[in-house]
Length: 308
Ligand SMILES: NC(=O)c1ccc[n+]([C@@H]2O[C@H](COP(=O)([O-])OP(=O)(O)OC[C@H]3O[C@@H](n4cnc5c(N)ncnc54)[C@H](O)[C@@H]3O)[C@@H](O)[C@H]2O)c1
Image (cartoon, rainbow, N blue to C red; front, side, top):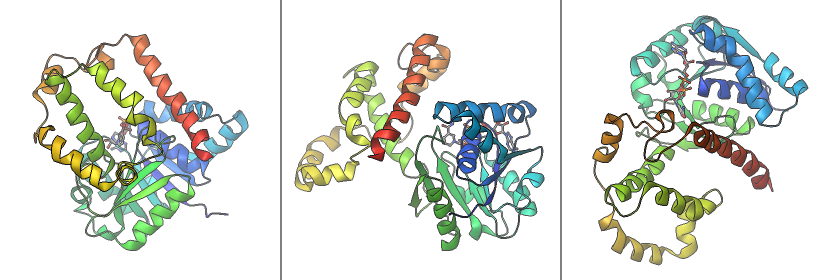
């Protein structure tokens, strides 16, 4: 049986509730903290709802919730922690202050991990006294359903800290992938936003509309992406074919360094996506909810299919 650890999760929002759920479901104790009283008061209920969506029954949900203790302060949550996962808002100074506080109150050997989306882990951890035990763990939303966690090394992170967190995550059923250099966007977001940059450009250049972009991805290479990575695919079709394609197509792909003016225009006009009823496409509240439900159902089904 795998060892049970004491873990702390800082932030009980979207990501924090899923990280806490995953660790508790794997048998670890979780100390969860959030300065917003409502976030803390509702988190057991939100975790129960997510577990129920994942197919867990009432008895198992109650058992998992017993593993999660709630605390008002960071010092109280990190005392005795083997691992500290930060999932607080994406603000550099806030994260730096949180880790300074965590370092002051957690055991000397505790591993400190940030879930920042794109901020350099190096900047977040620069002012710590023992930077060798600090690293990034980039979970994906929903953290309890997407297997990947990118484990990001800074120039100071020790191999032991990388191994310990990778083992913990693998033991909790996640798929940890090591990122050996602390680059913006790590691996997943670099790949994803390379695609989004071209997707936006296709619309901006009038080559197709946003719906066509989404249809092409969903009904074509998106279908095989969860079983065939891009470099596996390049090997499958042959590297010489890949080279020929790149010789023709790369010169015409979008390569601007900053955000697209088309995207900036949408934001300036208040077209913020599903929450405002329009972004690249128009959305009624019902259509937006249908998309959200479709993603959850699909992720749940994929889990069973890919187990085979
Ligand atoms: N939402 C995503 O898809 C996603 C994916 C990967 C990574 N992330 C990153 O994860 C982090 C959390 O994002 P989220 O989507 O869960 O945000 P969220 O707003 O849902 O949750 C953040 C929580 O942190 C709490 N908080 C505020 N100040 C705090 C403090 N000082 N200490 C502890 N908690 C504090 C807030 O009350 C809130 O409950 C961010 O860095 C974000 O960039 C988000």
